[in-house]
Image (cartoon, rainbow, N blue to C red):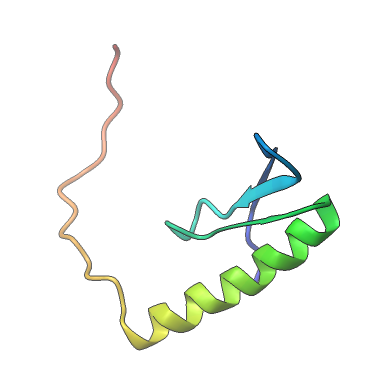
Amino acid sequence: MVYRVIIEKGEDFGFVVHCPSIPGCHSQGNTIEEAIENIKDAIRGCLSVLEEEPVPTREEIGAMEITV
């Protein structure tokens, strides 16, 4: 599967990477390449946990746009 990830420069060192479609799935690396490889491992780990213990679903009432 294809997952979108967001890569950011770390505050202290290296790079931090997030997978927004999997809440709580984050990783990091000293280089962008290392961060990408690490998030692949993190995604696999998160998916294996979700297969064992699915996240409870909520009943969705609806969606709307609001102006703030």
